[in-house]
Image (tube, rainbow, N blue to C red; front, side):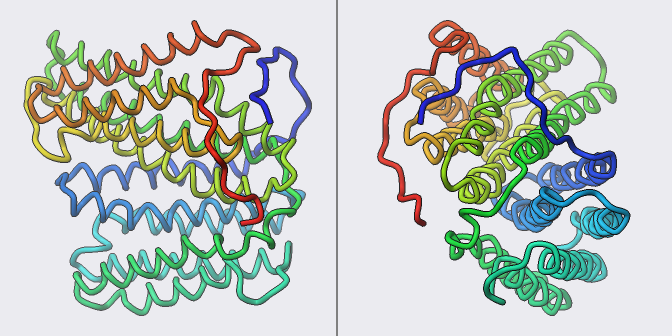
Length: 388
């Protein structure tokens, strides 16, 4: 399979419905809440907490998206969509305090998560069906029960139980490759839906940086950092939407097992993309708030580290689809890792500037070495068996 050429011709495809776009407003808030968890007190521990909270929100959104992908919109479907949106909304509201005291927030988060998994299990079973009663949605329901039952436990115990349950929930689809490989999918709809989520996560970087600038004195240093932060967001947008989104649609259309692409590249791969973008958003917000400050540890490395995670997720996604890796993306990821490693020695404005420079240079380099209709320079890597 080769990389698709650029095309200026549009083809008819299914679009997201107005109800789905309303549902996405909940996801805007959910991403914001996850960013607040990470931004409140940035450390390795809070990074882990943010991932524990992001995972069920993400997996719930994926379940809803797969549910409505091949089903014609009806009033009943809209009600299911709005119900799931309400549950995710409650989860997002409770997320910042769900792993801490008071326990009421944990009960709200876990209870809404359980209701979400119940609705998804019933709706998917009635609409799509599975060959066995043990499937990703039934396992998701069981783990949601475990999360709800452990919500009243002390904080440290609760964190470990939730982490274990979510690892099981996230790993369940890996056990059902044969069940998902040949499922019918609406290709363009899925590409659009996941692309919209990337836009939502990218928008968080604009919102965080802009909000910090608006509450600060707009001196030259703040304005410069804000401009550089915008370039980081634009650079990440270009890397994803200029090539990767089109490549994804091409793979889903032409590969013999599109269900595995949905599982590996969309469900798993895009979780890495979103996690990276949340980290970038928090890092840019911190930098704009105090451009001259030299941060330390995780806080200093959020922007370049998140951007590196974003690029590495794209590299893995491409390998899963094409069996090769783009050398420009690998080089950019390595460059961002270097920036992250030295970020504790530099003021925030310099870290953001270097991050923007790597991303913009990557965009320019890819335009120069691979124009319209030309593939990126790649290194072929043996791909895992498709029968997985």
